[in-house]
Length: 196
Image (cartoon, rainbow, N blue to C red; front, side, top):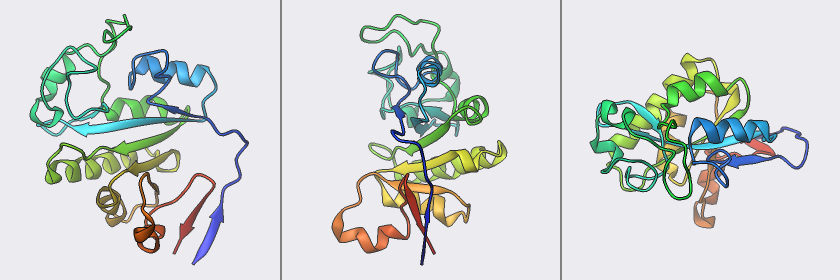
């Protein structure tokens, strides 16, 4: 086992769901503002629609951050594309839509590193497995593997990424100590990644 260490300037700034403290989370506006503010990395969340389109959205349902309702995995992409994602809470950005993962990788991976969290909560297992596979396919298609980190609270989701035999960094967000020996082969960190 060898340890590869990537030296970064400190502090290394990650914008959680974009500049979500001021702008609607996981929107293009939040990503643009995070980059303008000097973020080194943008964290975002992905979920798969019923018809297989990956969207950048945190919650399992559309209710909190969009003008829609229902579970993302139960809705078709044409419905999700019709929604506004910028008018919830204190926000008033009616032009903001739920971005597709494809457009985010295409438009942002060359500007900033992306930390792509594969969401698994409240989602059928087969559905999030397909989401992980589709995310890897999109990143490869855009030649962005060196600019993307896959993360999840689920070791199973990260196992899907690793099973595809791609050279990618993975980060387990909730590795417990009893899983430590197994997760070291699966998980990396931003300051260094353990490799076999």
